[in-house]
Image 1 (cartoon, rainbow, N blue to C red):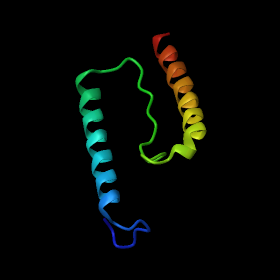
Image 2 (cartoon, one colour):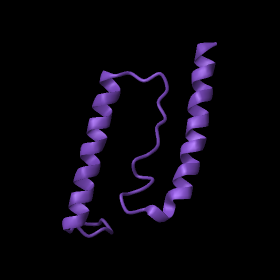
Image 3 (cartoon, helix red, strand yellow):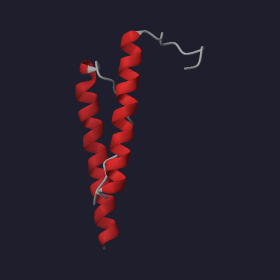
Length: 78
Protein backbone atom coordinates (compact mmCIF):
# COMPACT_ATOMS: atom_id res chain seq x y z
CA UNK A 1 0.00 0.00 0.00
CA UNK A 2 1.30 3.44 -0.83
CA UNK A 3 2.33 5.63 2.10
CA UNK A 4 0.21 8.48 0.74
CA UNK A 5 -2.99 6.48 1.24
CA UNK A 6 -5.55 8.20 3.45
CA UNK A 7 -6.64 4.86 4.91
CA UNK A 8 -4.51 3.63 7.77
CA UNK A 9 -3.43 0.02 7.56
CA UNK A 10 -4.71 -1.80 10.61
CA UNK A 11 -5.98 -5.31 11.29
CA UNK A 12 -9.53 -4.70 10.03
CA UNK A 13 -8.42 -2.79 6.94
CA UNK A 14 -5.94 -5.50 6.03
CA UNK A 15 -8.51 -8.25 6.62
CA UNK A 16 -11.16 -6.39 4.59
CA UNK A 17 -8.79 -5.70 1.68
CA UNK A 18 -7.48 -9.27 1.69
CA UNK A 19 -10.99 -10.72 1.67
CA UNK A 20 -12.04 -8.33 -1.09
CA UNK A 21 -9.05 -9.24 -3.23
CA UNK A 22 -9.65 -12.95 -2.72
CA UNK A 23 -13.33 -12.61 -3.61
CA UNK A 24 -12.45 -10.58 -6.71
CA UNK A 25 -9.88 -13.13 -7.87
CA UNK A 26 -12.28 -16.04 -7.36
CA UNK A 27 -15.00 -14.16 -9.23
CA UNK A 28 -12.70 -13.57 -12.20
CA UNK A 29 -11.73 -17.25 -12.27
CA UNK A 30 -15.38 -18.34 -12.16
CA UNK A 31 -16.34 -15.91 -14.93
CA UNK A 32 -13.50 -17.27 -17.06
CA UNK A 33 -14.45 -20.90 -16.39
CA UNK A 34 -18.23 -20.52 -16.68
CA UNK A 35 -18.80 -17.87 -19.35
CA UNK A 36 -22.02 -16.01 -18.52
CA UNK A 37 -24.47 -14.87 -21.21
CA UNK A 38 -24.86 -11.54 -19.46
CA UNK A 39 -22.26 -9.99 -17.18
CA UNK A 40 -23.36 -7.17 -14.93
CA UNK A 41 -20.08 -5.50 -14.04
CA UNK A 42 -20.14 -3.10 -11.08
CA UNK A 43 -16.91 -1.69 -9.68
CA UNK A 44 -15.73 -3.47 -6.54
CA UNK A 45 -14.66 -0.05 -5.26
CA UNK A 46 -18.23 1.29 -5.26
CA UNK A 47 -18.93 -0.13 -1.83
CA UNK A 48 -17.23 -1.91 1.02
CA UNK A 49 -18.17 -4.51 3.59
CA UNK A 50 -19.45 -1.97 6.10
CA UNK A 51 -21.16 0.46 3.68
CA UNK A 52 -24.71 -0.40 4.72
CA UNK A 53 -25.69 3.27 4.49
CA UNK A 54 -25.03 3.17 0.72
CA UNK A 55 -27.52 0.37 0.06
CA UNK A 56 -30.02 2.43 -1.95
CA UNK A 57 -27.26 4.01 -4.05
CA UNK A 58 -25.66 0.63 -4.79
CA UNK A 59 -29.00 -0.99 -5.64
CA UNK A 60 -29.79 1.81 -8.07
CA UNK A 61 -26.34 1.52 -9.65
CA UNK A 62 -26.95 -2.21 -10.04
CA UNK A 63 -30.35 -1.61 -11.66
CA UNK A 64 -28.88 0.85 -14.15
CA UNK A 65 -25.95 -1.41 -14.99
CA UNK A 66 -28.23 -4.44 -15.32
CA UNK A 67 -30.55 -2.53 -17.66
CA UNK A 68 -27.59 -1.50 -19.84
CA UNK A 69 -26.11 -5.02 -19.85
CA UNK A 70 -29.44 -6.57 -20.86
CA UNK A 71 -29.89 -4.01 -23.65
CA UNK A 72 -26.36 -4.73 -24.93
CA UNK A 73 -27.09 -8.45 -24.85
CA UNK A 74 -30.33 -7.98 -26.83
CA UNK A 75 -28.47 -5.83 -29.37
CA UNK A 76 -25.83 -8.54 -29.85
CA UNK A 77 -28.54 -11.15 -30.46
CA UNK A 78 -30.08 -9.14 -33.28
